[in-house]
Image (cartoon, rainbow, N blue to C red):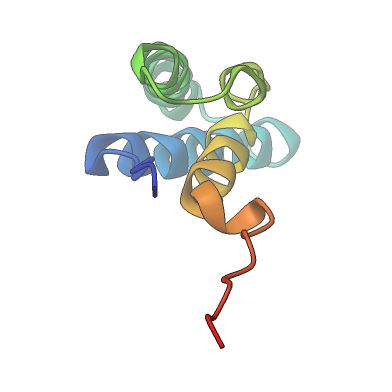
Length: 100
């Protein structure tokens, strides 16, 4: 039996937004440090992070390890997506017995 662990599309969008917003924030801090950019990207990153964590924790069939991965700031959402996409393919398959 295959368990469908396909993550919802909004989770994919939020996971990517979380990483991109973190990269933009850090780039801004270490280069020109524009205050308006910081004031937009900070809340964007925070909201994306919270969305990823809450959505992952609400997935009933997601293993505990995936839920913990989602807590990692910045890349946790993408790591959780990677594990969810693997689903049952990461588990060893039962050998099929062919009758003689």
